[in-house]
Image (cartoon, rainbow over all chains, first blue to last red; front, side):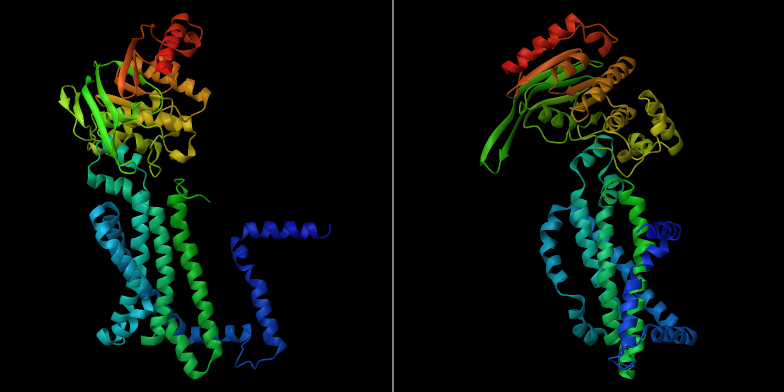
Length: 268
Length: 252
């Protein structure tokens, strides 16, 4: 037991020095299990590839330039869809959250359209817009829009009445109150909406690429199925997971850290 | 600084659950001359916070008049500064930006309003906290910021709604000492709502006892200033006045 203590303290010290290790460590057993099953060999490699197979595929596709290109296509589509979704969703959410009349009139409609899942729009969109960028953009915008609107509305309504009153009695006009009080007060909820919206949007994008795409990670995976390359499909799955982790850890989490957590609006 | 006058003020509202009209304020008339500190005390439910909310313009009054410097009140405005029991600081603004908020709304340029904010922060001994966020401060410090934020906007009347009710007893006495000192320096017109009788007497020139939506009594507090707890805690005049007001509140 005592012999393990120095080892444990070494692990702790190293992981503090390189935080990336804390992220990677949980995947060691997952990959080990995958590798063990592949090596144990009840399945042929073409059916159940091992980690080195997938890594080799990764290197090949990187060298050919296919993976970087498809990845860029997918990320660009998500970024455009997210930008439009936020650009429409936040103002709409503010309006619906602040106006009782708008809330009464639009809330049931919002819930109705939110219930029609992203993919459920694909059949009619393909008829309207064909197989292409318009259809995919529509699906992503649609998917990002609703969580952003709904959470923005909740955020606006969660701002305490005293803060409105304090601002009013310090001379703030209704327009200034929106900018100075409502938007920052609703920001933690807006971030939640964004997180959900991007998460759903990412999944919807992959699905849309599988069905209507001519490039992108979803297309890569579906195309690999046609070619019977399980290795490529698994690679696509791993890329999706890693990419989402990067979006979360490098974009969403730092924004949340700098706003809601800093202000004490969000508890750890 | 301006005077505040309430003439036959009344408030009734419709209670949707009970399905009946409720009278919160029956008939309250009160004169607060410019530069006077008036405390309003009374048991819970006597309507003291309702009066303050009406004077602040947060809720409409159903009858009578509210005049600030002779001008009727229509909705909230920067002529009446408010200090809230829940502090109501803006969590996303630093202490400096909270205090500079009123001047910012008036269009005062950044450099000038920072200067104003720093001057007022110094008044409450908060200069060191200027760049911190409210959630990094103790309750007592948050409320100092709340008081200073209202003052920095130079209101005609300062309205305080049980501002020290949610801080601990020691801090409360310190805050009362400080408020007393600041009032003596600046002489703002203040309406101070509280259920704490010694607090009301300690701070005010006059204590108004409210009961069931009406003024039960007004008690002048002629105790000399400067007032500090170190002196008043054993002062006979203070004790007598406190007991007198307490008896009125208990009879209410």
